[in-house]
Length: 148
Image 1 (cartoon, one colour):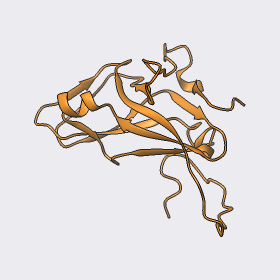
Image 2 (image 1 turned 90 degrees about the vertical axis):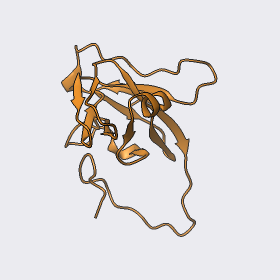
Image 3 (image 1 turned 120 degrees about the horizontal axis):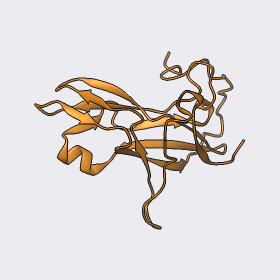
Image 4 (image 1 turned 60 degrees about the horizontal axis):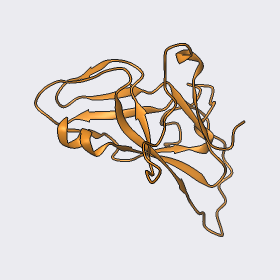
């Protein structure tokens, strides 16, 4: 298993999914693109598939944030404001750790997203835990599975 890497999930193998990359040497975010062409009607939320999963070392999380140009030009935001991809999400049995981007159309016109269009960015961030942390539960599923 790689220490920190994006990979294409099995369902999207042979579908020309690009591995995210940073576009400049000082960019923090890895651009995430839609794996499919979708249309989001005004007021609707759509889970946009990326066809990707991500591996990362212990103590890291991948934050998913809408690209600023998308928010301004297309009037779209992330429905959850900032997505959190936990390390133990990868390779889960429900969906293989497939990263979805929950996009909400805040505008008055339908928004089309073409396959391969960059819509969000993923940023790897280190995190800490408290000295008296006792969490030892294992992930039980895929997207949204840690809500109680």
